[in-house]
Image 1 (cartoon, rainbow, N blue to C red):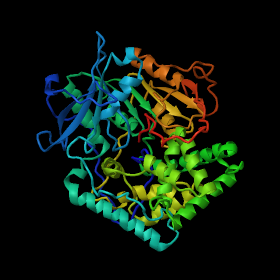
Image 2 (image 1 turned 60 degrees about the horizontal axis):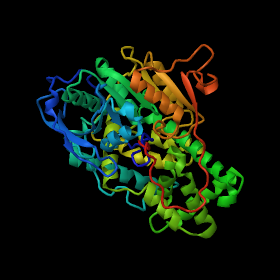
Image 3 (image 1 turned 180 degrees about the vertical axis):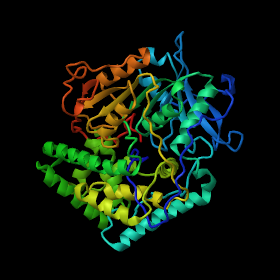
Image 4 (image 1 turned 90 degrees about the vertical axis):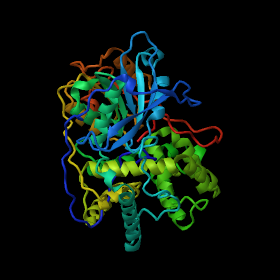
Length: 529
């Protein structure tokens, strides 16, 4: 998910089977423009005062390079070292997340001597943000209060399905001709248009979450153009997107239980009990109460799930979420819950754009069941094991059941033609479960896997773990990757879940309760879809 961060589950409806069209893997038939094709202008922000911006045109259909064009928005922090290592393209995930600010974030977060060696290039993928056209299928689609995500009766289920179908129909009405060209393969080919416009023979790449899949697809299509690549929190390419999202539901439920167990360990602060199971029961009682009386008229059960889902991405949100939970249960005070919703989950026009692109890419990328009975069966089965966000996630993806264009066939990203690729994966990551990192490690010959053992956060580099960041900086500076020794992974045991790792880093400590209630939390800087 976009606001909740990125590749959650799908749902469907009774429709005819989609026409499957295999994506072309040919490179765009374009001439190589020179660097002068880009005109960089200052676009400083308060946080990133050295940011520069430009645009480049790309074919809407890469099989028709002289046909209709789209505009891609770019950003840059230029290199300052005497010797440049060329462009480093960075992507925050999604699909649907804007990447313009990420150039500034990466440049500011890497060691200065490493950042200085690269032209760090951010970009808004096709359809996103400042790129044109910018998609917004149905403004206000997530305005509160939405129908209860849990379809306890036929009417609730029908209401949610009707709502999802209306979104797919709105996308078709506004962007019908564009939707066929909104998949990951088209976006990957756009990256090579950017490379050409930069005048670079090769690029380096750094992607989080969905950005790992985009990078892997680019590397499959253009292996000779990859200099270095970092994939952090890795999507399982064999499960896009239906099965990957069902797996996510199980993983997010486990992270939610980890949060509730943390609350129980800090009962002296939150007064919600010392037994995690009883704390969990209180959370679901809160959910049931909000179904009858939404907090501040805005936070019903669906919005409550939206609010607590970011805690599955980043445990730095746990103190604020625990405070809101405690205030609601113990003081009958809804204000902290409403504040947490406003900070972490409330939708705005940027999110409307991100969600529209999310749906357009994922619905186009791969086949989704068109028979609602399949979704009904699968989601109830997963819900029985993982009730936290399964149905919320189902409705988030339900437009794919009604999508107006057929699905593509995902490319096989297996690759033996690349330089060493550096992968990062936390063992308890919910958004991109650990198995995806192992799958890609095995599919990319010569890749190196760095594991954060026991870590449950998503997008783990440049987020405060010095061990992880040391491997990242060393690779970007020298191209060197860690390699497992006979006795196990570097700095680790090489046992259990980390047996395939080349290096193991300890997770950062869990957060502590706040001594005073602070303002609503700011997003984790590497919190991406």
